[in-house]
Image (cartoon, one colour):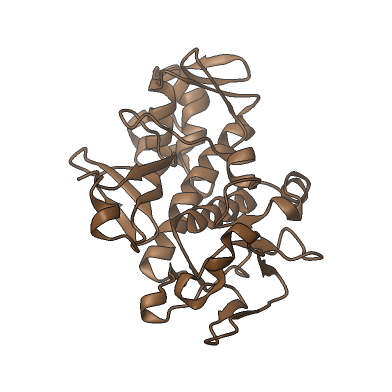
Length: 290
């Protein structure tokens, strides 16, 4: 989110490369891997590394390991910016997991089963000959261009949304995006913005994110890829919280031409205890590549 990736490799904070040495762990890494609420304990303040590591958060530990070992480098101006990035990645994955477990009310829309597109109070009313949107205060449906007008009939519903004009940009992802009925790209955008709100100051988020950039279900012009993420195309060594797109079986379009699963926009959610890489996207929680 706030660090820049270059080709030098590894993790750099304030111009200094961070390694896996005990000295770097005590001086820098422990402040990234141990949650803030545990940093006032005697164990954290001591010099026994094993005792400090027992306080670590697993997600933070995987992020640190990934950055230090990366062939691309993660450069941060200071420790605070690095901590914000770690927190951002963890909250993004946590938010997606909440959508998959029902803690946050989110799912796919489905014309075949009358599950209509919705974001917060903005919901499609699928009247047979005159489908229209019930508009909420925080979100509006995006009008489709003429060459896609056929998508406005009930058989071809769509889920593309823009923050409503006049809304407070720091509030549109503060629970006002729920319930959500859309697709995986929109769910990922929601998770990214919830995480950004948690990791940045509200003033910083509002300055970075004008209303016309707060899109859900649309990539072009969205703040998600412009400000916070780039698509990680290298599945060999992803880092916890990376944005990944996994394509479905090439036969899928023919077998299910109206299906939602052409591919999955998701986060890399780290490895399990057996070392298997796991991914999390809307409707897909804690899945391996297989």
